[in-house]
Amino acid sequence: MNAVHVSLKWVGMILICMFMSGCASSRLASTLKPSGDTQLKLGQARFCIISYTDVYDKAIPETNNSQYRLTAGKLQDRARKLYPELFADDWAALPVMIKAEIKNDSSSMERAGMFTGLTFGLIPFHGKATQSYKITTDVRDALGESMADKSVSFDVEIGTWVSIVGPLGCIPVPGQADLPRDTVFLFIPLTGDPYATGTKYADYHTDCMIEAVTKSLRSVDTAALETAHKARQSRLRQVAIDGQNFWSFLAPNISRESGRPVSFIALLYQEKPDRGTKPYAQVIVARPGENGGWSPVNGYLRTTRKLTAVSALMENGAPSRIAVRVVEEPPLEDFIDTPDISGPDRADNLRWSNSVLIEAKNRSLEKLLREESRNTLMGLVTRIEKSILDLSEQAERAKDRAQNIVQKGEGDPAPERELSILCRQRIEVLKPILAALKQEAAARRLE
Image (cartoon, rainbow, N blue to C red; front, side, top):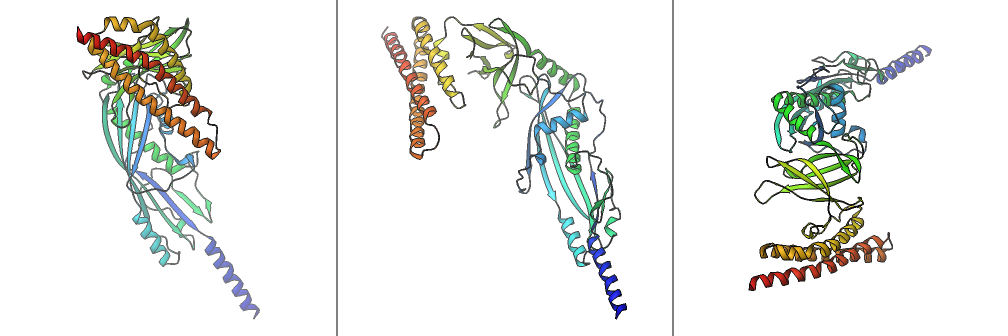
C-alpha cells in the first residue's frame, strides 16, 4: 500500500513537472536586412521622415499603448540611429513621406497549434507567421514637388513551435534566423534579447522598413538630391522684425488629399530652429495663381509694433525666400476675406483683423476707388458679399452654440458670444465699404 502511495506520489510529481514545462523556441527572418552601415551617405543630402501611414489587409485591434504604435517620429528617431549621416532633424533635410501596405498570413501558425494540440501538447509543430510589406517612399524637394515615389517590398517571417508538456519545445526551431533564436524553458527565457527595449520583433520590423526607405533613396540621382538639399538650405534665413533678428524658413504646405503643395508658409523663430521647435509665428506667403503658377500674397504679423507684412520673393516663377516690410497703408483687398476662426485664438485673430480692416478702410479705400478698374471693383464687391454671408452664418452658429451651453448648463458661453459679436462687428465695417464700391462701379458704368 505504501509502495502504491509512493508510486502515485512520483507519478503526480512527474505529471506536474511535465505540465509546468511549457517550452518554446522562435526565430525571426526577413528578406530585406538592415545593412548596418552607419557611415552611409548620399553626398551632402540629408533627409527627415515627416509622414507615415499604414494600410493593413485585415483589421487589427486598436491598442491604447502608444509604445506599439509606429509613427513618423519613431521612424525618424530610429533612422537617425541606424544612418546618422543620412537622416537629420534640421529644416534643410529633405522631407520624406512613407506609406506602408502590410499583409498578414498566420495560417501556418494556426495549423501548427492544431497539430500540437492533437498530441496533447507533447510534440511541437513548426508554424510560421509572415508579414508582407510594400514600403513606398516619397521624397520632396524645396518646392514640395515629388522627386521620387518608389516602392520596395519584403517579407518578415516569424517561425515558432511550442510544447505544453515536456521539453521538446526548447529545441531551437528550424529555419533561417536573422537574430539569435529565443528559447523558453519552464517559462524562463534562456537567450538574451539583442534589442534593449524588450520589443525585439517590432524593432526589427522597423529596422527593415527603414532599410526599404534607404534603398529607395539610394536609387535616386545623388546630384539631384544634393541640389534639392541646397535649395532647402537657402530657405533658412535671418530677417529683421521690430529691430530684432529672427530665423525664417519658407516651407511648402502639402495637401493630405492631393499630395500637392497648395501654398507656401513663412515660419518665424526666435532662435535657429530644428523640426521640433515651435514657431513664433507662421503666415501664408504664396498661393497658386490664376495662370497655374505661384503668386506671392501678403501675410501679416499680429504681434509687431507696426503693421508688418511677410511675402514671398519669386525666382523663376517659384517662391525662393521671404521679404518682411512695414506697411503704412494697409491694402483693403488683403483684409476683405474672413480670417481663420477655427483655432483656439479665433477671437484674438478676428479682433485684430477687424481693427486693421477699419484702418485699411480709412487709409486705402479712397485711393482704391480712384485708381482701380470697374472689373476690379466688382470683384471686390463679390468678395465682400460672400464674406458678409459667411460672417452672418458664423455669427448665428456661435449664438446657437452659446444658447445650447446655457440650456445644458455645461461650460462657459462667453467665448461663443464673443465670436458672434465680433462677426457682426466685422459685417458693420464691411457694409460701408461695399456701398462705396457699388456706387463707384455704377458711376463707371455710366461713363
